[in-house]
Image (cartoon, one colour):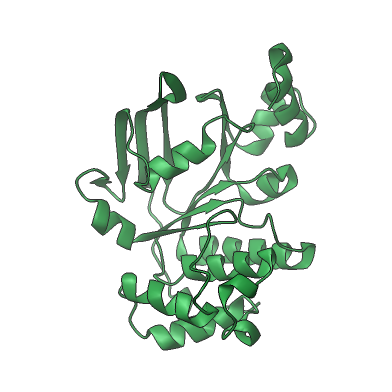
Length: 259
C-alpha cells in the first residue's frame, strides 16, 4: 500500500485548533445523548473518542459532520462556525464509517466518480486510479457495490474519504471489517498522512490496542459526558489500568452499568 509522492507535498504544521467544540449538547425526547461536552483538535493531531455503546460517540460525530443539529453548544471547524459555513467546511473535510452504506447499484468506480464530482476534485480520473491502487481495490472497480464483502466496502469508503485531500478526517470504526493485514496497512497509511500532511483525524474504535497505537490524545465519553481526557498513557495511569481495555471495562461497568 504505497502512497503517490504527489500526495505528500510538505504542509506547514502550526499550533492551531482545527476543531473547537464548546458546550455541545443533544437531547432526544428528553434524553441527553450528549451533555455539554467541550474539546478541541489541534492541527496534525489524532484525537480518539472512546466510550461504551450509547455513550454519545456517534451522536457527537454526526453533529460535527452537520448530520444532526445540536440542541445547544457551538462547533467551529477550520476557524468557521459550522451552522453558518456548513458547505465550505464540508468541502474541506471527509469521513469514513464501516456502518454507512454506499449506493448499491453503482460500481466502485462510479461511486468514487460521483463523490469526486460532489467534492469538485480536479484530475479526478487520476486520483481515483491512485486510490484504487492504494487500497487494493483496482480489480473490483467495475463490480456493483452490492456484490462486495464488508471489508471491500470499507476500503471503498476509505478511498472515498481521501478523494478531496481533506484537512480534517472523521473515522468511525474504520478498520472494523478489515482483516488483520489490511487493518495494519490502513493504520500505517493513515499515520503517514497524519505525519506528512499534518492531517487532523477524529477516530473512534472499539479496538483498544488500535486506539493506543493511533491516538495522540483520547476523550472518554460515558453517558454523554467526558469522564477522562489525555494521552493513552495518562488515562491508563489515572484509572490504574495496565491497558486501555482495562480502563474501558472499569468505566463501562461502574455502578453495575453495562456498556
